[in-house]
Amino acid sequence: MFEKITNNKRKFILLSTIALFIYSLFAIYYNIQFLFVLPIIALIVVFSLKIEFGIYLMAFSLPMIGWNFYFFNLEIPFIDLLSLFVFTSFISSLLFKMVFGNKNVSKKIKWPWIFSFTLFFASFMLSSFFSKDQFFSLWYTIRWIFVLYTFYIFLPVQIINKKEVLKNILIAFLLSGLLMSFLAILSLFIQDWSFFVRMKPISIFGIYLFGDNQNLIAESLLPSLFFSLALREKINNILFKKVINISAILMLVVAVGTFSRAAWLSLFLTSLIFLIFGIKKNVQNKKRIVVGLSVVIILMIPVFVYMYQMQTAYRIGVSSTENRLLLTEISWQAFKENPVLGKGPGQYINLVADNVRFRAKYGDPIDSHGVLQKILAENGLLGVIAFIFFSVVVLFSLLPALKRNKEKKYFLFLFLAFFSIYFFQIFNTSYFKAKTWFPAAVVLSAITIYKEDNEE
Image 1 (tube, rainbow, N blue to C red):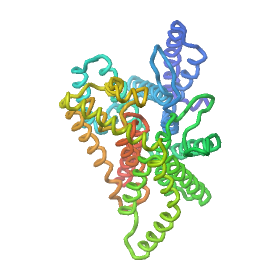
Image 2: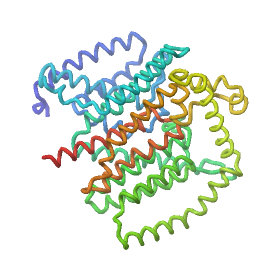
Image 3: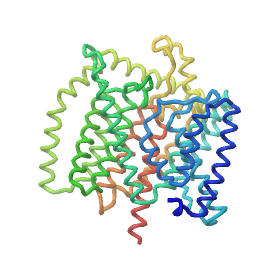
Image 4: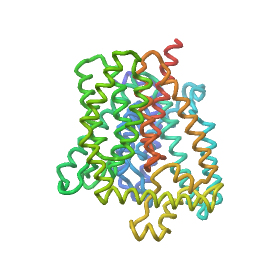
C-alpha cells in the first residue's frame, strides 16, 4: 500500500505530522484534552489525502446544528467544526501542491457568485460600522456570512468536480434524511397522545443532533427528499430504486407530519414547479396527474383537518402565529428607525430582548423567523437589496437545470432540493447556515460537470 503513495504525498504527510504535533503541544498548553486532538489530527491528514471523504461527511452532517462544542467561550456546532477541518485540509493540500507540485493549480480555483456575494458581504460590513456594538456586529458578519460562503459555497464547488463525487454526495443526503426520519418517527412513541402529536426531534444521550424544533427537521428533509429522487434517476439497480422510492415516501410523510406550515408551503410550491417543468404535456399524462392529485387530496383530507385544528383550536398554533406577527412588528419598527443600514448584523435578538411585550408574553428572546424580516431590521434597505441581488444571481445561475432536455428530471430534482429549503427560509431561522447554501453549491457543481461532459 505504501508503495502507491507518491513522494509528494510522503512529504506532505511528514510536514502535516510535524505541524499537527506542534498544534497538539499548543492544545495541551491551553488545556484542550489531547484525546480530542488525536481524532482531529487523523481527520485532517485523511481529508488532505482524500478530500472527498470530508465533503461526503459534511453533506451527511449538514442538519447537525444541535451538537455543539465549546472553545474559549465559543460555541461551535459539529457541522461548522467538521467544515473547518475539511477546509483546513483543502487549503493545506492546495498549498502543498503549489509548493511541491503543480504551480498552476491556483488557476483551477472557482469563485462562484463572488461579485454578488461581495456586495452582500460589503452591506453587512458597512452596517457593522454603524452598529451600536461594532465589534459584535463585525464578528457576526465574519462568523456567519464569511463562513457561509467559504465553507458551504466555495469549498464544495472546488471538490465536487466528478460524477462519482456528485453521486456519493446524493447518497450522503439520502442516508442523512433516513436518519432524521427514523428519529422523528421514534418521537411519536414518547409523546403525550392526549395533546397535539407531530413528528419532532428527539435527543440522543441528551443531545438534540438536529435541533429541538420540528421546523429544523422539516427544512432539512426537503433537500434530502429531492436529492434522493435525483439519485434515483441515476440508478440502474431495480432493488436500489425501490429502496429510494420507499425512503422518499418516508421522508415526505415525516416532513408533512411535522405540521410545519413552511414545509407544507414549500412542498406545494415545489410540486407546482415539478408539474410545470417535469411532466410531459400529453393527454395520457394529464389524466394520470388528475387521478394522482385526486388520490393525494383524498388521502390528505384528515391531515388537512388536523392542521386546521392545530392552527385554530390548539393554543400552540395560535400562539405561533401571534409570535411571528410580533416579531414582524419589531423588525418593521427597527427598520423605520434605521431604514438605510439597519441596527447592525446580529442585533435582531437584542431588539427582541428589549421588547417588553415579547418578554412578558413569550419569555426568552429568539432570532427572526424569516430572512427578509431579519435583514430588514439589521441591515436596512441596503442589505435587503444586496441579499435580493445575490439570491437572484444564484437562482438564475441554477435555472439551466430547469431547461435541460437530457436528464430533465434529474436536474429538476436537483434544483428543487435547493429551492425547497431556500423558500423555507422566508419563514425560518437557517438562512445563514450550511443546510441552506450547501445544496446550491451541489446544484451548481452538477451543472458544471455535465456542461463540461457535453462539451467533451
